[in-house]
Picture 1 (cartoon, rainbow, N blue to C red):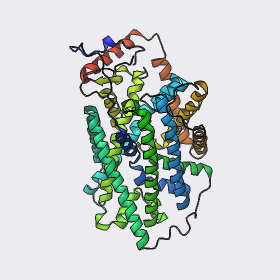
Picture 2 (spheres, one colour):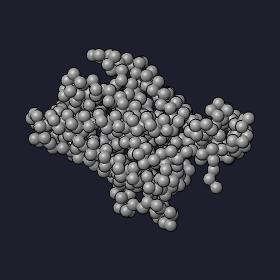
Picture 3 (cartoon, rainbow, N blue to C red):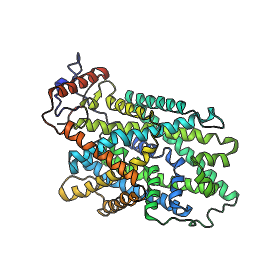
Length: 485
C-alpha cells in the first residue's frame, strides 16, 4: 500500500546512483492533441450506438436532435475542462480537479472507480469489439468463438501497452494513423448515404418525429447513449503535462476536434437513416455492418475492417491517456508509489501502463463485462458533474487564481444543470444500475481511511509497501518523477 512520503533515496535504481529522477517529456503538439481527442472519441460508438439512441428516443427526428445535443454538450464540457486544465495544469483530468476543489477523499473515490471499473472496462469493451470484427471473416455465417475473441483482445491490449511503454512517439504515430483511418471509414458512410439519397427514394424522413418518446427519463437515457459515442472528450486533460504549450494547444485541440466530430456524427447518422429503415436499425447490433451489407454489396467486408481499425486506434489513445490518471494518483499517494515511477530509458510511466493492462486483462475473464457499462454510465456522469461543480467552487473560493483560459460563467452553469438532470432523471428508469454505481463509489470510503488516511500503519504494511516499490524499480528500471522547484 502507498507510503505517506516515499524518500527519494529509497527508490533509486541500484547500481545507478547518478540517476535520481527523470521527467515526462513534452512530446505532444497540436496535431497530436487533436488526434488523441478524435482517436479516443471515434471508437466503436458511432458504428454501433445509433441503435441505443433510437431505441430510447423513439423517432428518427429526436434521435438526430440527441446527436446534435450530445455534441454541443460535449463541446461545452470540454471548454469548461479547458479552463480547469490550464488553471490546474496537472495530468490526471477529473482526479486533479476534484482533488484541488474538494480535497483528497472525493478525488480518491473518483480514482477508485476509474481504476477498477471505468477505464479498464472501457478498454476491455473496445478491445473485445476490435477482436470481434477483425475475426469475423474467419467465422463466416456465425459469431466468432468467444475464447478466440477474448484471447485476441488480450493480445492486442498487451501489444498496445508494449508500444506505449516503449516510445511515446510510437504511440502518438499509431494514434495519428488510425485516426485518419476511422475518419476515412465515416467519409465512406457519409458519401454512400448521399449517393443513396439522390439515387433512390427514402421514406424515413417523411414523418421524422413519429413514435417520439417524450418521457424525460428515457430522453436522458438516449443522451447517455449519444454521450457514450462522444466519451473521451476530456482525455487530453489527462496528459496536460506532456502537451507542448498547453495554454494554447489544449483549447485549440478542443475547438477543432469537437465541432468536427459532431458534424461527422450527424452526417453519419443521416446516412444510416437514409439507407436503413427504423426497424432495421433497431434489429441490428452493429449498424455500420448492416449498412455495409445493404449498400456496399461485395465490398461490404470493408466495414468490419474499418470498425476494427477504429477501435484499435481508440484503444491505443485510451491506454496512452488513462494510464497517466493512475500515474498522477500514485504520485499523490493514493496508489502504490511504484505506479508513479518512470522508466529511465524511454521516459514513460511504465508501471502505470502495465498495472492498467493487468486489470484490463482480468476483465476478459468476466463474461458479463458488457453489463458493467450500464452500471458505470451513471458514475461517470456523477463525477463529471462534481468536476464542473469544482470549477464554479474555485471561481468563488479562489477568484484570483491564475486562469489562462476563462470561459463565460454561463457555460459551466448550463453544463452543471444539464448534468444534474442527466444524473437524476434515469434514477426511476434504471434504479438497479444507479444503486450498483453508488455502492461501487461508497466501497472506496473504508479503503481510503484504512490504507491512505491512517497515519500509524503497522510496520509490516509499510515494509511490504517499500519492498513492492523497490521490486518494481528494479524490474522496470524506473525512478521517481523529477520534481519542479
